[in-house]
Image (cartoon, rainbow, N blue to C red; front, top):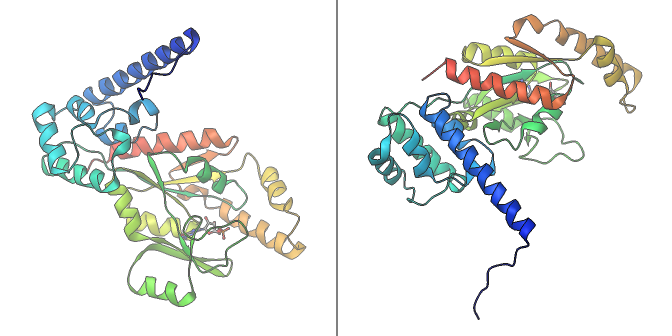
Amino acid sequence: MAIKPPQLTAEARAAAGAKAVAARRERAAVKAALSSGAIGIFEAINDGRESIQRMRVSELLDAAPGVGSRRTYTLMAKAGISETRRIGGLGSHQLQKLRSEMILNKVPVSPGALIVMSGPGGVGKSTITAHLRNHPAIWISVSVTTREPRENEKDGHDYHFVTEEKFDQLIARNELLEWAEFAGARYGTPREAVATALDLGKHVLLEIEIAGARQIRKADPKALLVFIAPPSWEELVDRLTSRGTDSPERRAARLALAEEEMACVDEFDEVLVNHQVDEVALALLSLATYRSRETPK
Ligand code: 5GP
């Protein structure tokens, strides 16, 4: 049976045409930004828009300064990427290969930035993280912890939940980039996963408490430490005390801890006031982009 093209109404055809025009414009803008050096190859690859994800890898590489069509095909062949592959279809192994081939061939690639986000409990850090979770330019580190999972938390997604023995083992094997104790449990950042994501040009976001942030500062002076502050102390108190499930003692302890945490604000590179989650998420993303450009490998 012959397959007929779908019958489109005049409006649907016009809408499809307009969408195609907009997509072409977006692709042209990205290629122009790449050629002029305003963005890097991996920034373009990590651009989440459908129009960019549907662009051919070859078309993108060809537009990059210092690549050109001959090198495009050599790089792609070495990375095991077929000529017709689109950006959205690249696997992480291929991305990694492409990146290392580019470094070998002295094509400039900007590494991802390591961003540490801290701030007092109740300030909304996890909502900000959730907001950024599906952004292709960002990789969110999943910590290991010895605390019990809460309802709705999934192992491997919110945390890797481990035993005390396993945590001891991770420390002994130097597999944690940092770790700290908080409210009776231990929390740590897996070292290797962070390095892999940075190698793929992703910005890595760690949502950790302050002792951990200090360790990252020492381990990697290029890391950007961002403090999330509440619009006012009163608002934070409101947020912390409105969780009806806490006992008065627990509530007082949480407030005391928040006060201590607020006092550390000066140790951070940037302070973002959480008036609105989407604004903070956007600000984090631009800070990450700036930081990765400042510190070429
Ligand atoms: P919660 O138990 O409420 O999920 O987290 C408690 C605190 O631990 C939060 O301030 C959170 O940011 C912090 N935290 C989560 N993961 C890590 C980690 O890997 N390292 C450190 N140092 N703190 C973490």
